[in-house]
Length: 253
Image 1: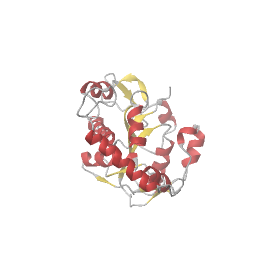
Image 2: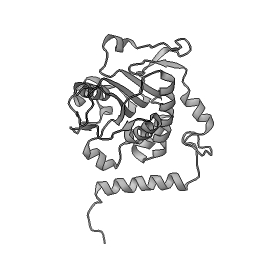
Image 3: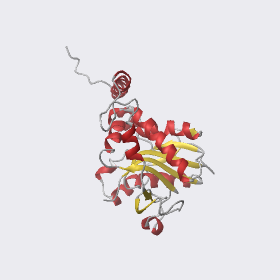
Image 4: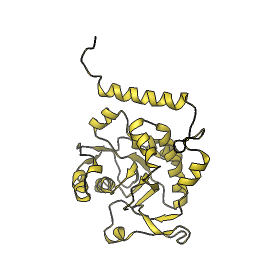
């Protein structure tokens, strides 16, 4: 007979992680995009097709520009918006646009606990960083979730990318460097101005960041309002530089 009591959310989160881990280990490997047999998250064909962008991206916000990397080999190009009104962060690296079919990878990580996706994102972000000529951060931290959302989900998808990325960069990783002090509405449902107000005072720095170059990691960057608010908070606490590492970037179109 049912007790009528729901399972605690932290138990549900742990169960979800365990099921996802068992699925990754026990099931035959398939490419997450095309379904072909693969020992990695993506088969070689998809891996080569989707991550080798020819387009140039803004060095500050990672929005795609009209030119290709070949046309601006080694140049530090910026979009008009960042030149006109620079954000508080200094640079952003992104692997690709947030659109089909790559959006399924971010959704699998965020809602289905496919942690192998976080490892793959970290590997490609490390390669992207190596090609960027940017200085290495002193510490890596994820965009934090509120305690309520972290307990309900059971994990922070940004940390699933940040931890292996820090290991590859040979720098420290701190999941608690920044905390979210306010439970905000999901950014995806808000317009740009509301997004900025939504996260304006949502974060607090818990560690000593004075003089440090901080790398902030997230799975998807949409308007940049969250990352801008984080960078502003970090710099008010003494951070010298803030670089964003994001797996996917929502294009303006």
